[in-house]
Length: 492
Ligand code: BG6
Image 1 (cartoon, helix red, strand yellow):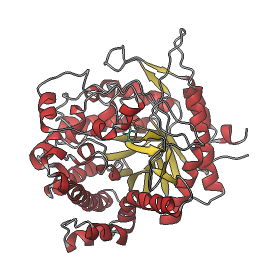
Image 2: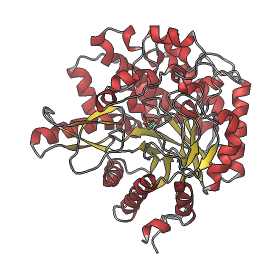
Image 3: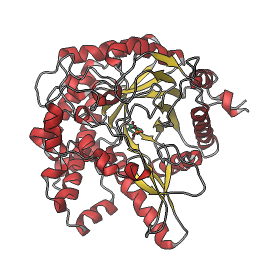
Image 4: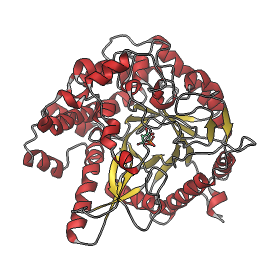
């Protein structure tokens, strides 16, 4: 009888900025996500405007700060986990989760980011959340920064472009790892650390319009350097404060295929993959890969880094590699004439052999196996799939049920490929957390109607609804998968 290896961790993943709500409660400060505007893309052309979806300027921030509106700033209310956490954690535990990935809202602990003293009420909130998880035997896997830099760091310091961000972040890490040393043993430093290139504001607190356009690439890579140093220091601090903990990096696994077998396209694909791998290469090997340094040199990017920085990066590499995987895409040297589609905050060439989600993200379970093999062959360190799922418009039937067979089908196929990667390809995989076990606000469009959960939350794109939770069809299905350690779908 086939099943996953003993001790394999099963669960789901969320992020504070997209579901916690309580944006002005408990002493919390405003984060970059609290000023993110609702988008309702009506066409593929609008979906392809991924930069527009993530872009922001000082005027927009000023306008956001002048209002307490939650309709057009949906991440302010999320699904109100802040007041529902006991009920939500009980529902997650009801599926038999052995791990639950979540994030701490940095601005709940340090409202501006630069304070010396943390906000006790914020710390107490996560104490209660972790206690609740532990009560059900769920291991928390905590992302330290998931699109939640305090807004003040963006406004007053230019976010991660300023070296002082390293100091603020490491102080935050020291505080939370000391406080939760007995409750949290699994940590991730930056969610999708590579995303600073695609949405610099959410990840790096960088307001693009403040910089000269020709300098902005340099600004992003400088901010990224600061994050690398901070991430390495976070590994050091976490290990000192919690000797038995493990700290991972987190990568967006954007898997690209060459659109044709023309050598130019294959080269383009290789280069595109390197633009993602340069992040994990640095965090896993503790040094910049030669190809990234060559890029700096060739493009005259003057990235300031000290010998001490490089020493820190080398001394404290991550313990494991985690990543999100939703879809794959194609790439070509010359995309002219090719049909384009959307992917996770990128525009991609459509692959004629695979279907797409309603948001254009191409559904490719085999791509997950390919990704696992590529990453394991490259690093020989344990992997963790910390996001995988299908965003869809669910329909509530007259009897209140949601028949989300499409979600079951998507997840089943991905889990089956994951199993093959372990059994047939020898990949070492620690666990799997779906995105997201409970409906929440979409990161890229700020829509509520792009739902991922096993648990339906009665709230619409305009924040209207009862916020009542109910189980979808997929809830019992995933419970059975976990309860049988995968056997229920591996032996059909
Ligand atoms: C990942 C992010 O890239 O994709 C999540 O880490 C995000 O925060 C998820 O929610 C799905 O993307 P979206 O745009 O559908 O919410």
